[in-house]
Length: 159
Length: 99
Image (tube, rainbow over all chains, first blue to last red):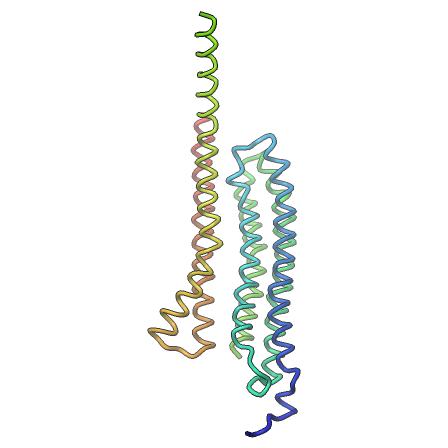
């Protein structure tokens, strides 16, 4: 049995991959939770006077949930690729850490944006229904930030 | 006579309450259906497309099949989200017109 090269395949190589997978899902879930909670308070305040608008105003919550799905996809991809140190060079660990951080922090930022936009947009839609289209557009632009992180993460993962 | 009138008014108020509750029930049902499909469909499509299509039929290697199925699940997710937004927009137009 040939000993693994200690320079390219150190024993701590998989640590970086594991941290990448964990940071992908943890940071995305943090952003998604903030987005859900912040837009949830807006929906709760708005629904007291306009309960018929609940179906429309659930959209920010669903978009925040999608951010967590991005993180889940990358975390599952990275977890599937982690192996024992002799088959897992530290270069791959760095790539996986980078992929996880890319989707994690992008998801965190997108979740913050969705929360703030969802809160204000849902309250405004109750007063002026024409705001709905604008709110959807802004929410899509906020959610695309998370999608950019996912694209970069998948590109790094495929290196 | 009083009892009959009471009963009638009670049943009328019950009926109107039921009529008021019906659209909410329909909205709740459709929202639940769409939310569940948005949460479940991407995960299902990821694993199904990976195991059946990309590993089974095309027999790609691990990285390629993972990336293809991830793209597939993200596509399914956005189609479901688009249908939900369209439904929320179109469905609410109808109820506001009714009011």
